[in-house]
Image (cartoon, rainbow, N blue to C red; front, side):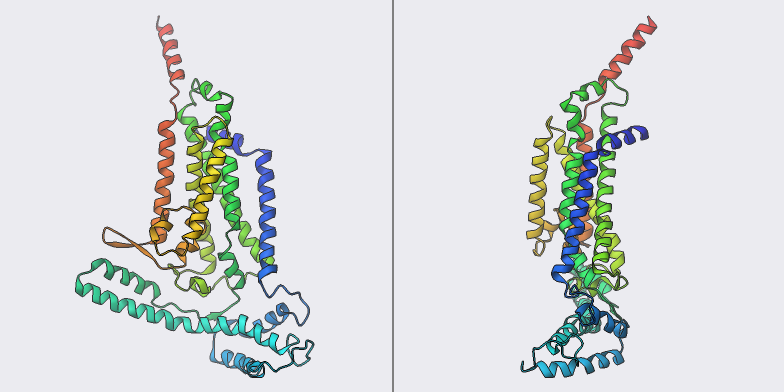
Length: 413
């Protein structure tokens, strides 16, 4: 059986066309990531001594690490005179001022505002914010418990345990992770590549009518179907994992740093209400695994569709249309209050910040289940259901069995 799986994998996916598409998509993805840096980051302005890039990293050595009162006071001693001088908008706008870091007082104030004052203020006050949420959740849990509302009491207890003790004690660069965690372009490339790769899994043999001939082989029928499903699963895992690694490496190379990997996930502003407690590097790994599950579920759906056609074009167009609907729906519902719409859409696992950036629950047997766990479980069930349906609908190799019976009958005579 293992040999059959290997054979199906090499036959279906170790093709020049697949490799070419993979390389082209990888290059497009890296180009897009590099464009993200140059289009949106203010640190992409060069490396001369007065560029924001150079000034930021010179200052960074003074403020990185543990946030202390001394560092805050030192930062304010630089920032406050600039804020006062530019408050009435009468300061000179000329560049090249030798008494400034970037050549202009307004520019000095802006770089400190964006990259030091705002993030450090957010880091410093986050502990207070989290403590207030935890305190309120504990109070709510006690009230609901007295009222006999068990589900609400349990939900608030989970929130209390999640937020209790949250703290951002260190200051570090986290702009790269902000763009990395909100990057979705590679998801589209992964879906297209997986659709292109697996859509011919069943079709190629139907087009040449080899599917009927395989039923005369001991390894034909359901064994071949199972081998194809395993091969397609390995292909999907490989493609999804490749682009997850490519995304992380691409952002690290484009932004020229991996600083801030040790920060907690909620250090990124739009993850302030994150549903889990982990570091940024841990979430990068978790996100890659969750994406694999989402892509696998959608790919099993594509594979199921391909069973009913003898021409690859029809299931490809159908699968592309289904994927497009899921992507558009997922994007539109990403900030919806209807949690179930996110859970039943496997695209939410690809753009998993939809699930992880907010603390949301669904009720099951009186217990609060985090929305991301519900989405993962639902996706796995859908994928396994598609596999079960494919195995049930695949033909048995009865022709091979009938031939063996006839041979045995002849031998006995």
